[in-house]
View 1 (tube, rainbow, N blue to C red):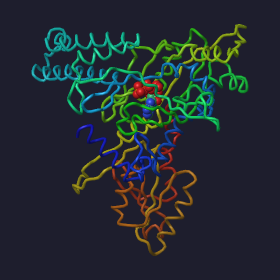
View 2 (cartoon, rainbow, N blue to C red):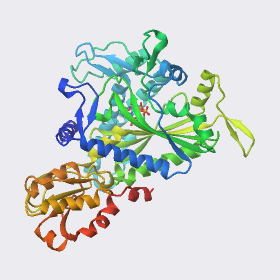
View 3 (cartoon, protein in one colour):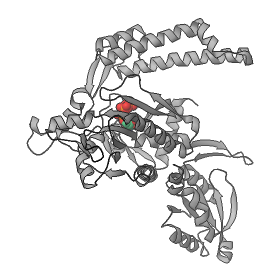
View 4 (cartoon, rainbow, N blue to C red):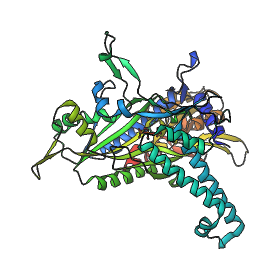
Length: 513
Ligand code: ATP
């Protein structure tokens, strides 16, 4: 299945089963804005809980914060967002479609990389065991030519970005003969900068002084509260502040479902350290965050680091954790060593001292910051795209669609299904739920055949279904059915918490960190 088809299927599945709806659907939707339905909201909350507890409960020196979305507009001048939170945009004159110029170039580079990979795989198949990839890369003319195109373009691209040279970005697009995917033409406008922040007005007086922004990241709320938290929490460096909240970006091209939205949620942690120790912490957080991802069991090979060639002006090291989405490896989370840039700028712009007094050395300094920043919606997409499985059931040959969501994150943990609506079976089923609902998200369903009900539970990723039948009334046992293996066994109702507890409890994930 092609990537477009997979995404289409996923979007349809998410809508049909109450995970995600297009925002304002009644009015034909609002571009790149989505609503989370009944199961989506639960899954999202579970992801948040896993992140929040992994960062705060599991670290004595990390505390939480919930800062406002509206902030003083000067904050965004200090942070550099007013001046530089731009993306270079370009329009195709024939299709009238708008693109991010940097993305067009990145996609072109990726295509060249893919061509090289294909060439290598073809040769490997042909030559067999004796194939020497290094030698092939150094001698094959097509590979060498593509490799040199990649290096030249990358060099020009990095330098153009560093110097804000928009003319050169257009030249690169023209020299690479990049065509518009819609019209196929190479008839491009000039490249222009576009600021991604949404503006609005505060209060009833509508003048320039009342202009404020919807925050494009949650991090600044943490920086401007650094002293508040440090002082009131008597925090000693190194320590971190974690926050989950909405962020808004007027993205030029918002495609690929919830991968790039205009309203989204971030989970960010700023870790304040002594200057000079930042690289140690940067490496620590890279490893810890990767472990957090891998603990969910979504495939070790589906993650990789991408170290940035071009660093933002404030950073001295930066890497992305990339995940294998249906459209290939893409950024899921960023880990950035941001130096003392943010706190120093807020010190400068507010005119107030933002320093930490180190009781061990009797010195004051502006702390350095290592941040971890992950998009909650992107994490949601990673989980659902990895979980979505279409399979043929052995034995019956029947097709089923099952969401193999990590059990601890599943929106519903247990479905309790009376075999029929009669003979006290519903009452028995409800009694089971009344006993378990304090610890597990339970779902009751009595309509349709058991087979159909199992399929509906598969489609939302419920790890366990129990069926209540006449025998249950006699000996207090039920049939438990496991989502992934579809195996069924007869167990005592009293055993249910123990059977489910291990797998669906967040503690099981947290203990592995
Ligand atoms: P990109 O290069 O994809 O635009 P970015 O480098 O600008 O992302 P950051 O500013 O580092 O992203 O934001 C941190 C995280 O927030 C990203 O790793 C991503 O998971 C998430 N994120 C950023 N922009 C969006 C968006 N428009 N929609 C959904 N999630 C987003």
